[in-house]
Length: 175
Image 1: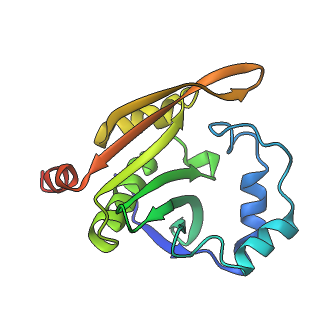
Image 2: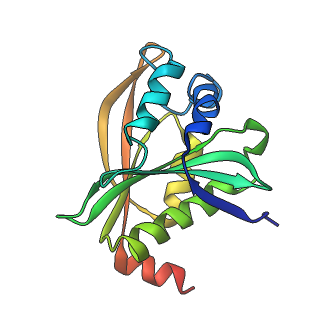
């Protein structure tokens, strides 16, 4: 049984946490290679200028028992076309494989459809990130493959795009 997860906005006091997670090869392994490490200064500045929470992006800290375990991201919010991209980063490696991604994903979809009033939500996933591909396929439909779109560790990888539309979400959440 999953413990109750709580969601909150990023605060200035979260800078060191983000710095640690963003610079961890384990945590960011499912993402494309970083061109350089993140600096604490750049993360503090991003928080200060509102990059994590704006009309175009909502980044949430996910907590369990008062401790941050993950980030839930809604980015590229497009209110004209009523769509956005979602992503999840489980920052605490001791929480991997415990079903949190599915629960966080459902909450992000609820926010997108029920609170923001979006029509389409999508996720772009690197083909080497097999766990994210599996999770996305639980609620979303595979839409497209962008061939050799990412270069990581000397290999070209595809990006796979999954999406879900509001009517599909309505059917899913009423099951």
